[in-house]
Length: 245
Image 1 (spheres, rainbow, N blue to C red):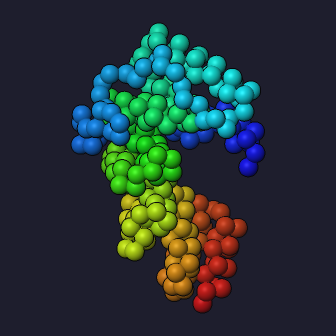
Image 2 (image 1 turned 180 degrees about the vertical axis):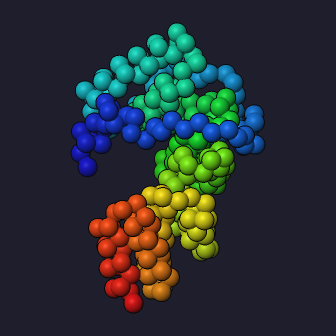
Image 3 (image 1 turned 30 degrees about the horizontal axis):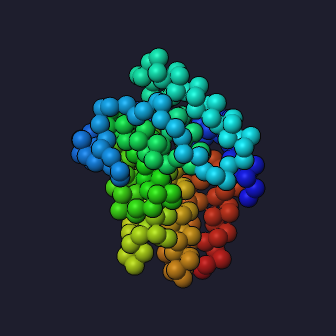
């Protein structure tokens, strides 16, 4: 992947992973609890400290991102009560490679918005893939699920898949956690998200040589695809199941 490709997602792409989800619940994880390198609190992160840019970012993209960060900071300095703008600033920090500042913003939002799913999920992703701490990654993903639990809609499927990947490749690999978390999600949610979870479970079982279990999961995914009138996808899943029988 070229640097231009890697860092060129500054415009429209900056909002791709931001999903504004508001549900009503409270988790104990952020009630004045501490995050890595600091304590989450009601105090807003600094809008004047320098940004620690990744040295691999091309100069022109760094200049562009610097201006975008400056613009967001200026807007926030006029009115701190702008949830979506804080989310966008955190993504810009992450794109810049300043993971500490991204973390500080997400922890600030998680503390002040107890029903915020997005910041919790993003913290899980940060700890899983960037500032590696798998215990904290799991904690934040589970906190995102708890925040999403009121209506069972939101982004629960995305978080279940993230936990599955965490357990499959990084953490608790010698347990049944990778399959169990998908089964939990399948029991809880329906629709297209459940299709994705069943498909992931089928692929996981297939990779383990558990053909009968994989075929059953593919057929469950096919049934879900038919329910949403996606006959071509259902046919693909049925073919995958048949190949295993």
